[in-house]
Length: 314
Image (tube, rainbow, N blue to C red):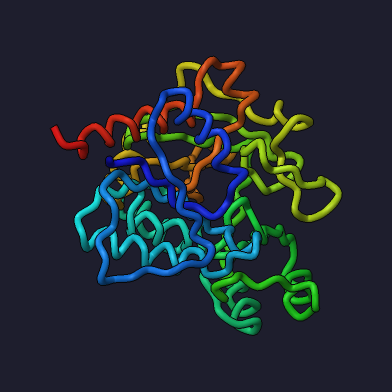
């Protein structure tokens, strides 16, 4: 019997999705893609395959999770299986450079960004940006590696020190700092390529913005993630949200085989919007959803259920 297959590498992030499947009586199987085997001479099972591989998998000891997921997705694609968030989506998940190229191609403004490989090149690239600016990892997730610099000497000291943290793919991004009137960003959620809701996120306590309830990281270190019991007020779903970017985002996602995602933007003091992240492994904050009376994982489960009906024999 065809089933829903969830491809992932983080058990905790999948917990609310499991609950949503069970509440709806949907058959599902999880493929944990940290390590494994793909026999290219075999046929994959029938069903719908939902890719939830994360760019931050290396932070959980799954360094080659994305590469393994790419092999599995190629195998599934070869055999014509229904894939949600397919190979193109994975390419964007693990590369902000690819994200910005896709966004700009769709007429979406992104911050001025320079990609650099090598410590000397990072220092040289910084001279091409006005102050202040930020650095971030090309393959990151959750805002990993984001640092703000208000002078060039501070960057030089950091890059030349033992504290320097390279991106797992070796590519460091230097990006213009968007001076927002308030410390907040907006995250626009899509399920099935359609707008679900937008959430306002308070960034005053840190750059790591994963809303998953499973994120329980101390605010006393550099890995702060504003999610969970003490920080639920940092997430607020916006009622009646409308923005010209919603339609553009939908077009960009469709062009890149992305069915489920959260897209983040920030407004500067002149009201100009800059989009800086496409998260194809999107999570939701349960407290914010409870207050708004909605469920992102519930919407995903229902969408996958509808897709499963399409591949079931009549």
